[in-house]
Length: 261
Image (cartoon, rainbow, N blue to C red):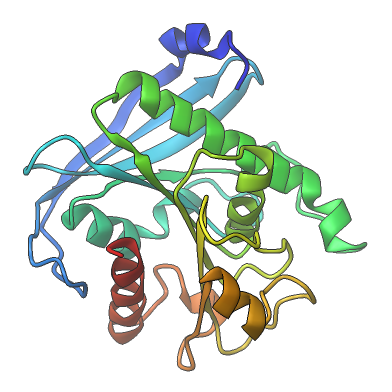
């Protein structure tokens, strides 16, 4: 983070809240029996250092204190369609209902170049993952400046597919900022081989295979305490809001179990 960025955060809100709604407490899965009503706000931030708009949706529990752990959600690739950050509501609402402060980030803008489909993905897509990591770091710093009561010792990154590749890259580009990362079927960027700082967790689909070296070997999983779980009844494209009720429950239960360790 550039030291001047904190000065720019006085001007980060480009557009006032576009929507604000209350959602019922979600009790799907997890060992935590508490359930809070969830408020969702959407806002577009402006990163002055990059002159880049960053739309976000904030899912916040409406009771039970302010010292909340943070989860930042990164969506899968959707050809620069606006609103992609809203397509993981079942995850965000469930986590917020269990007491997490959840922010879903829109990484792609209609004016951005499309993700390359030819060439070596680890090379040609790296700049897109770098930009995503910058977006995550910007939003995290924004929260630190505007919501200092949140628990920034318990920050988790959660990303699907291309968003998962951004999440996997983040600890390399911005070390020591997050406690845990969770990827939903990232396929291109290698997961960091760490026992802690961050802890690593990944849920895998039944129909897509990761590139060589992306996932840890069984020996690495055991030695580093990394958790890789296969979902035999969930395909790659059903990890967002396309998921059935049964798939949503299974995914949420896995996520809450890992977060509550």
